Image (cartoon, rainbow over all chains, first blue to last red):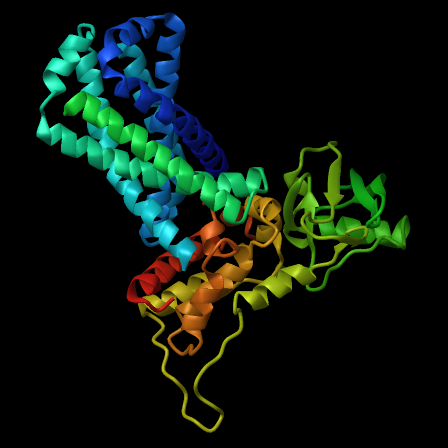
Length: 100
Length: 109
Length: 239
């Protein structure tokens, strides 16, 4: 389980690294924000937004797991952090899907 | 020594980003309610010093965290190691910092 | 109560090799190592395999059983589904010498590179140094001291496969037990040896090592400890 959360952590990190420059660039063009916002209404873009939020949640969940393992003394329950990370990811993904 | 410093910077910015992301996600989910227009957004954000400070911290933390995170990915998956990798990552950090602060100023200044 | 086991055992060398099927009459309580011995005795006297204690203490009989690195002497045959063929291969990450025997020199070289040897300050002429068993330091050492050097963790680790220089979970676990040993004198040097791209900072907490260790150790915990210790040393200017 830990291995899959670690892979997801890495893949979501890569996705976020690719997304972030685009995100910054779009926001930096604030004067054209309305036309950009219109573009974001498209269903494919909405799906992309949801995927980004999911990636963010996955990366955050996986990251908190890494921080817990690296900074706290070893406890048996740390092995279950992978499951917790996955659960948090799904929860946030669901919440955002409902809000969309 | 260098890798230890990178590791530490990565974990510290991770903790900072964890907080920033929670705030950001909550804000966005709230702001998305009832539709978005540029005027609505910019009306709320322009001239707001507190949010400017917050997002500046967010951008700096992300500009440090992302390249350090990509470093082992490049090393392990692309077998890319050595000074050229470090240079490329440094460049990426600069790009994130520049684009990020440009966005922060456009939205909040 | 006799059963017939179907075994697919790797036969071959560094250049070429393949899985060969053997059908073996088995009995209750057998472990994989017993079956390998029976193959050696009755069907293939030239089947090469390392083993010694058959009690999970020496670390010699590591193999990949159904794709997972384990000790052959600690893997009971009755844990497998009846009738299903069981594959036995040499553990990956090491060059194959022959059949199930691999060249493990790199494993032990890395152990040495991680400063895995104890160096105390006292000699036979001095009085014993007092180690408090219940102290947090000694408890940390005890948690990792039972390593038998079987290399199961090393062959399970994804980073070992992706990063040839990586010292690996076993070497780093041993280094950690020495970092926490209050009698140790070489720790500043040791922390320098385990920091960096080949050391503890290459670990991505996949935890395959902790999952597969036959002695139920947690190299992940030890490596996390090394990350903290090296960071602390770096902040103090001691690294």
